[in-house]
Image 1 (cartoon, rainbow, N blue to C red):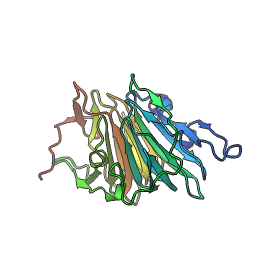
Image 2 (cartoon, rainbow, N blue to C red):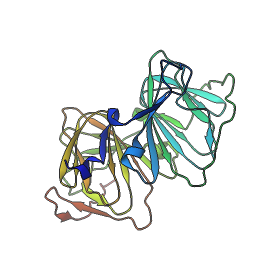
Image 3 (tube, one colour):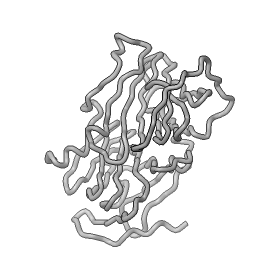
Length: 281
């Protein structure tokens, strides 16, 4: 893959790490890798944070405009939302609307890692209130938290396009997200996550939660696996194929359908094909 295409995908270990040295400050705010800075995303930020036992992924804070979405990749701990704390573990997702104070606390004996996605807001103000001394653990799950496997999947294979089966778990819809889209796709061996296509305005970020895939990017191919990332800016021709023996799980973020958005679809030979039809309900 050429240098131009190479900048649209990365492996997590290739991203420079910053933050607290775990050997120097066990009570600090962990370390993080800024994926969006490397990929030069336009509408949102994406970072992977790692907190060691007792650490936070960030200071307890709240945003006036920015929205954030946490996906716990490994480990377990507690999500502080306002005055409450909620037990979370790998596979859990948390939506944080503006105005809610929050952070993720590693209360286990092993490292905790989370992907944190956030919108870019020009008028956002961030405040750092005092964290509650002893947050109450509520008796039931918060509606802003869901396990990926608890979100019902739907088969969205398009009629007339031999790319499926394609299953989607609408995480954003389940958690009431507004301002961006977030889905999980479970892709069967040999299948594609979508028809080969390009967006006019919309940008997408794909995070491989598990499995082995090949990204088809403007005619070139890249083999990716667990915790790799692919970014498709507007106008980029792309699709993702499951090249492993087991199902692939993809976490996909995008900005909402913007004005002027259109999608053009192609076969693998580069010929334009008709727009897919949604499956019959």
